Image 1 (cartoon, rainbow, N blue to C red):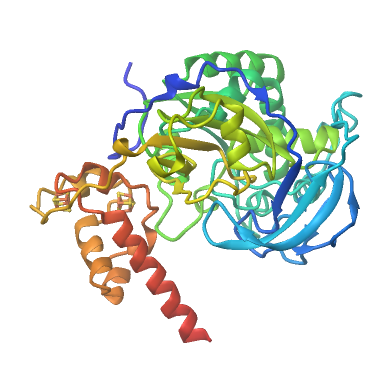
Image 2 (image 1 turned 180 degrees about the vertical axis):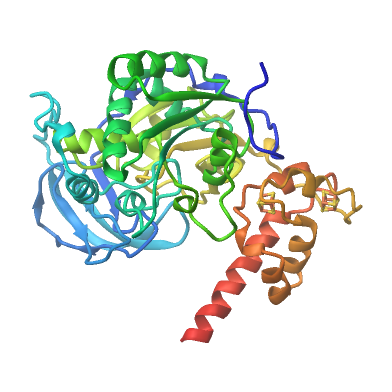
Length: 447
Ligand code: SF4
Ligand code: SF4
């Protein structure tokens, strides 16, 4: 049977076998956590604590009056050491709260008493309020505040809730393990999301390299949500991108510049759905997540349950360390296709950190690039139906107006074009430059 998928895209080597059968282990509680006040798209939080304050596990330590934002919470109990500008794994520096874990700290068991709230009885407003209060954001990497995502604009009709179980980035397996190990919570989270957005048609898209996840979710759905449809998809990158998943699973096309609401869909990631259930049923804020630490440069690849704010360094140590010195390695926040290379390892794992990929330098050695031979391979691979060869040149030459006319801003930086280019042209890097320049020009116009 031919499985559903979207058009174009690529089939990179996935290397999932390094970690996808490793059950999630709890990482050690760090002596210090570094909790950035901006881990999401939208307004950064303002600190609610100061140096020397004593904080509890789960206490809100940052928030701001804004619709597009998400508060942050302490992931341990301890004492605030500082509030400072510190390196962020997404690049640059952001304000962060550094907390020293108390010596007598015993982690709280949020689920000890079982569900303390009847989730089925909650109204959409109550669900959105709790999701915001718990600081939940898209955990597949997009980091968009979930309370906003589940607030359909006035007049929008959402008929379908689509859950993203693709995890198409090479090496990563945190969503895979989430589906295998937490299928009941996932399905209950889906049920709550349906209540929130009023969708009658729940679907989950899972790629066919995760058949144990398909089985686990199917069994949980049979008991808890029989109407949940499980759509097996052909394994292909970048199927986890929202627009690609909607096309693959539902054959609906989200117009350029529009959101999934436009075609009656709300998309959420599997990890997000689990966190939503934990927030609603156990009043647990988003203070921990599963992080895959993998790649040919790490001694023992693992899936770890990690307190937000634990440094990459500590998590790498937890996996036996790097095979060689960091200088001879590439350590990436996320996967190799869309992740960000880290020059230092004292950065914290944040809510959007699905993985840390450690690759030996020879695997990712930057190659010399050559002239374009007009083979159109990049055009054939681009899932957004763009002209990467032209956009790349426009970025390289800073021709921003034309870049905009060619819909360059709708490039999702998936890297498919660079991946297939026989001349090794760094197309996505050039496109990123053009996007940064265009945004700067826009800002200057409105300054
Ligand atoms: S142009 Fe953008 S969307 Fe298209 S393949 Fe390249 S990176 Fe992906
Ligand atoms: S894949 Fe590379 S060589 Fe081929 S058309 Fe695109 S940019 Fe040119």
